[in-house]
Length: 293
Image 1 (cartoon, one colour):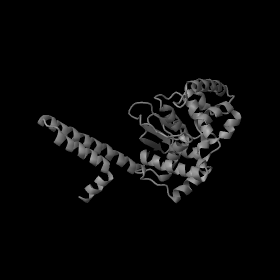
Image 2 (cartoon, helix red, strand yellow):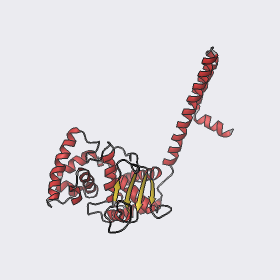
Image 3 (cartoon, helix red, strand yellow):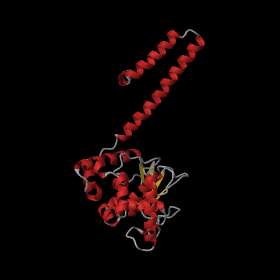
C-alpha cells in the first residue's frame, strides 16, 4: 500500500487526469455500451502510459547505473592520451559519456565470462573520442561490442596472422554488433602518434552509418559539403595509391575507409593534419567543434 501511495505522489498529475477521465465517463456518458467502451479506452490508455513510463524509468536507472570512480579516472589518465590532454571540465564530460556508454552498450570479451574493466574502458573511450566535438552522441542500433583477444578472419577464427582488426556490420543478423581485436585496440591507445586507432576507426564507420549507408559521407555533411569532401577525398586517395601521401594506405581503399582513416588522423594528430592537409582539417573542424567543450 505504501508503494502505491509513493507511486501516486510521483505521478500525481497523470493520476488526477486519468481519474478525472474515468469519473467523466462514468458520470456523463448515459448509454451503457458507450460508457463501457469509454471505461475500456481510459483503462487501456492508463495501461499504455504505465508501460511506457516504466520503460523510461528502467532506462534512466540503467543510464545512472555506472559512475566513474577515482580509480577509473586514474586509469583513464594513464591509458587514454586523449583524456589526459583534456581540461578538468572536459574530463568530466568524457567520464560522464563513458558511464553512459557502459550503461547502454554491452561489451563482451570473447573467451571470458565477463569483460575486463580495462577492455570495456578501451572500447568506451574509442566511442567517446570518435563522437567528441559533436553536439550529440548516438550509437544508433549498436547494442553489443564483441572483443576478440587478437586479429580474426571472416569466420571469427583468432590468430596474429589474420588481418581483420575491427568490423562494423551493415545489415544482417549482426547489424547491431561491432567486432574488435583487443591487441589492436590497445595498441591504438599505447601509440598516440601513429594516426591509427582501430576503435576510433570502427566508431567512425558507425557514425558514417547513421544515414543508412557506410559511404564516407556522414549525414552531418550538407550537399555542398559532401561535394567538397568527395573532391578532397578522391584527390587524396589518388596520392595514397601513388605512394605520395602521409595518410594510412588503407584510406585509399574507398570513400568509407578514407573517412574512417582521416578521422583517426584528426582525433590523434589534429595539429599535424592542419599543417599537412588544411582543407580537410577545416572541413572536419567545422563538424567537430572542439571549442564548444
